[in-house]
Length: 129
Image 1 (cartoon, one colour):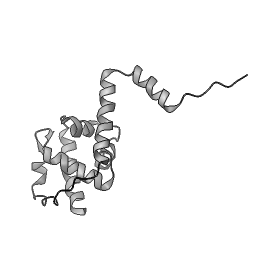
Image 2 (cartoon, rainbow, N blue to C red):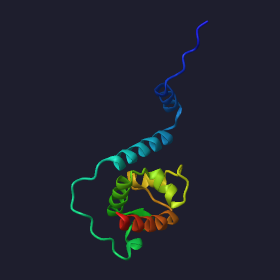
Image 3 (cartoon, rainbow, N blue to C red):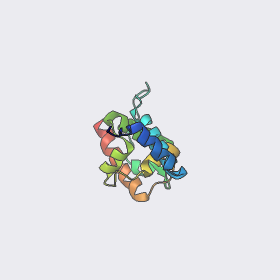
Image 4 (cartoon, rainbow, N blue to C red):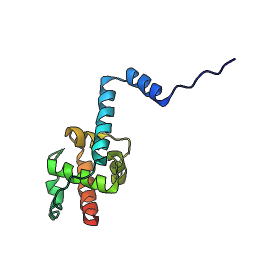
């Protein structure tokens, strides 16, 4: 009697992909693209300008991150080798919360509590770097 062959991780992933809905597939693609962008080496640009004292007021327009804020967050993520889920965990939110991933990849809205925590996190980690 032969043993049944275990499915490879790739086959498991393909099966899960075919069973997933359109929203789940898009969330997965957003997560992967944000993590790929976070791992890219920083482009050769001059040093970032110093962070102004009122950085908390300048990181978002309402509930949407400014493009300059997205660049700053991704630069810190690259320097610290963090994924968006790692940043969320450092901010005190669930690492399974994909809202930061969507905000970075698709410019989606964030909760105001996440924006406030992200402002403090950016200030602290840009000062380190």
